[in-house]
Image 1 (tube, rainbow, N blue to C red):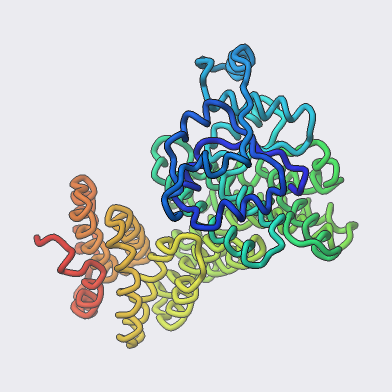
Image 2 (cartoon, rainbow, N blue to C red; image 1 turned 45 degrees about the vertical axis):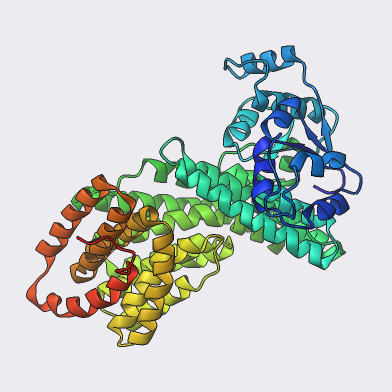
Length: 503
């Protein structure tokens, strides 16, 4: 999206800006738009009429502050009804979402560069399902793409910072709605959208070539995942789209996979491993005649699917008791995570490898893996809490009490900010430790998870965790009880007594 992009903007984008934008934003936006206007509908105007730029001096009304950069376009009610009928939904003429899609689709008939800015994932799925003539992106990606038109270094940094803040809010909201829809698909769309935005950055020939490559990687990834790609961009992929097509069977296989015990588990491992071998062989033959650049694009696009498959094989091998085989699969998963520059997957792979190290009582290697994972930069620092807790445990096991206390203190600040989320995180880590037969570690995390559940008033979770505590207690033998007092004193710091309710 360069200077020719046509932006149609939903209410939720302006709400994010009202909450996050700071002094200077209005001037920065005016500078990057360079006379262009953001398109809205009368319905959007009504929904954000009272939104203020809360962090700006005087808390100015957002619509008034951005008036010169906004253009409201009325949409015919008959067109809204027609679109509602086309997508199979009933809708009132004033339906804001539909009016925005009508506007974007009508503009898409005149321009190939129309983007509807909204974090409403339903708009994206509807547009793809009914072949509407526009792209979608969340507000955070919109802000990231504007960086391409922000050659001023200070302005560039401010837009990037604002984009990160908005992205964190988008993800937090998406995760909070996980019981209502498939949040994983939405998060994947958000990440894919962000990755595809990187093609806008830079201006010289070398950077132009890099933008093209990143766009092709993003498009090829979308092909593998079954998403729609514009015909022109699909054509630019050439034979790569056919060569990597078999990789999609891996994701389809994993979606139906059930990791069960005994002979069923062994069967699942063999089936998955055989499928992976067949896919890599077929893709390898297709890539062999191609040049290095095209092969690299394919490898990076395929990495996500291969990563998930190797992770699944690693977990199944661990469940079957094949520790070295599990380590090999999880190490390959970590390597693949670095190819897609997916920090979350990298951390998860390192935590799984660290768990294997704990299981084999290689505490030093576990410490290195957990510490590396905990130190990875993330969009939301709270995502690193499981790694921090495990780094604290590993530090204690290797005799570094000072480092252990520091990690506990760091994790505690995040847990106390969100006790409900913290309880869930600690429960997952505890169950993972129980699964590798380290009940003396798991039992203390279940205890702290119960403290968090009490703070959050989640009685049902508290009861479920008490069952986990009993399971861990039954799994303990006398030799394992020796470490418990030290770990208890350490991990009690996750829920400080001045904030934790008394039992």
